[in-house]
Length: 123
Ligand SMILES: [Zn+2]
Image 1 (spheres, rainbow, N blue to C red):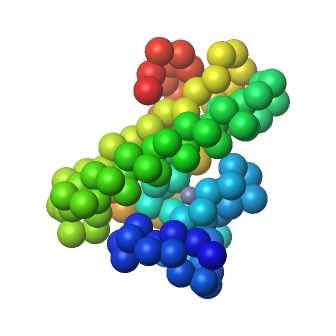
Image 2 (image 1 turned 135 degrees about the vertical axis):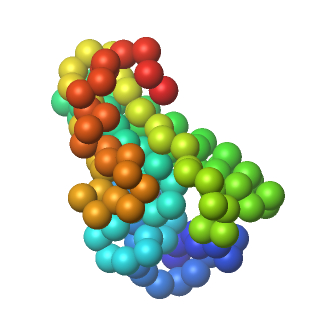
């Protein structure tokens, strides 16, 4: 089972979000190997070497999915909304954040470039 934020319903088949095994994301992705709508908004993920970074990130992403899904009731950050979606930097104290951007990102935001910004105080 995975959540389809467009239908706002759970469906029984893949493609699942690429973060399903990493942080337990339960949303569907546009294609196999891609991130769901919510995870795709995360440009930087915390360094998994940092203690508790992954469980904290998982908890934060779950809260973010809840917010994104509820804002979807007003069509915010959905495909029919022409505005640019928000970009999230999920950081932990210390270490290097991990870029999550797509190489084929059409929005021009490109997560990889964001990795050159400050590690702290963003997001
Ligand atoms: Zn996801």
